[in-house]
Length: 527
Image (tube, rainbow, N blue to C red; front, top):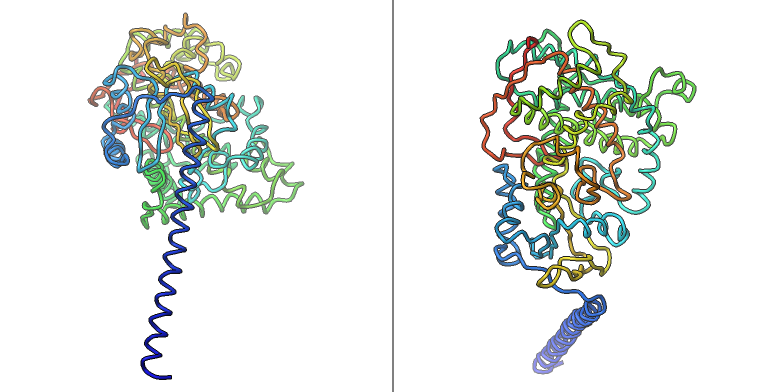
C-alpha cells in the first residue's frame, strides 16, 4: 500500500470516528433534553391537576444556594444556626413556608402544622430520610434512626418491646449515679460550675447501664476520689467528636462526602470497638445464662431476637445517641431556665416536697413512674423546656415521588405546594413552637403556667416528632428527667444562675441540641 493510500485511509477512519462520536454525543444530548422536557411537562400537568402554586422564594441564597450553604455552616459554628430561621421568619413577614436552593438542590422549608401532619403521618409513604443514612452510616450503621422502609419497620418492631412501661418504670436504677453526681456538685462548695457537662456524663452512665448491662462510670474521676478507666474516657470523647462530624455532613446535604477527615474515622473506630466489647460479651452467654441474668438489660433482650453482632452494635449506638443526648439536653436547658426564674423554682420545689418529702423525710420508694406522672407542675416545666428547646430543633424529609404539601403556596399561602421527587422538605419544631398564634404573645418566654390552659395543640407541638416515626423512648426520657429533677431539688434546694451567655443563648447542634457555652449555676444543700 502506497504512503498516499495509507494517509487517506487514516484520515477516512478519523473522519468516520468523529462522525460517530458526534452522532452518539448528539443522541445523548437529545435523550437528556427529551427527558427533562417530558419531566417538565409531566410536572406542569401534575401542578395544574393538584392546584399547586409556588411558595415565596428565599431571596438571599445566592447562586444555586451556595451562599445559603455557607451561611448554615457559619451559623452552626457560631451557635446561631437554630435562631437563623427564626430571624428569617420574622424578617420576611412571618411566612411559614418558602422554597430555597441548597447546593443546587431545591428545598421547601415549612412550619405549617398541616404540612407537618402530611409530611410525618398522612403522606408518610411519600417521603423518606433521603441521604441521612449516608450521613450517619459510618458511626450509626443500619439502625432505627438511619433506615427507611422494611429495615426501619424491622428495627422498630424489635425495639418497641424494650421500651415497655415495665422497663421504664425502674427509676431507682438512676439513684446510684445521682449520688456520684452529688459528689461533683458538692466539690464546688457553692461556687459556679457547668452542670451540662455533668448531665452528659450522668446520662451516658445511666444509658450504658440500661443498654449494656453495666455502666461505663464516666462520672468517675480523680476530683472525687474515683478512678475512671482510660478506655471509657476515650470512648466518651470519641463519641462526642464523631457526632460533631455527623452534624457537619448533614448540613452539607448532597456534598456530605466532602467531609471525611481522618479524625472522624479514628473516633468512629474507637466507638465501634468499645461497643463490640459489650456485644461480644452478650453473645458469649448461652440462652440459659441470658434467662438467669438479674434485672433488665436492653442488649440481653435484643440478643434473644438476633445474634448478628453488627445489628446489635448498630441498634445499641442508635439508642445510645437518643438515650444520652436528648435527656442530657433536656435537663441542661431545664436547669438553665429554672436557675433564671426563682419564682418557678419555688413552685416546683413546693410540689416536689409535698409529694416526695425533703430533708430527713424523703421516701425514695415513693418516687415511681406513676407518682412522677401525677406531678402536674413538673410536667409543665418539662413541656415548656421541650417547647422552647426541642431535642431535635430542625429536621427534614425527602420526597420519594412527585407529591404535594397541603398549604403554603400562592399569594395567600393557602394553595398546595408542589414537591418534586428528590426535593428536601425541612421543618423546624424550634421555630414552630415559638409562634405567637399557638402560644401567645409571650411565646418566647419560659412560662410553665401556660400549659394549664393550653388547648389541643396537635401538630403545633412536636418535641418527639410525630406519626409512625414518633420517638419510642419519649416516656423513658421524660421519666429519667423527672426523677433527676426531683432528686436534685431534694438534695440542693438552693439554685442560682451563674449564666453570662448572650440572649438568645448559643446552641450547639450535633444530632441533637445542647447549650454551646455550658449551663453555669450554683447549687447548695442549704435553703
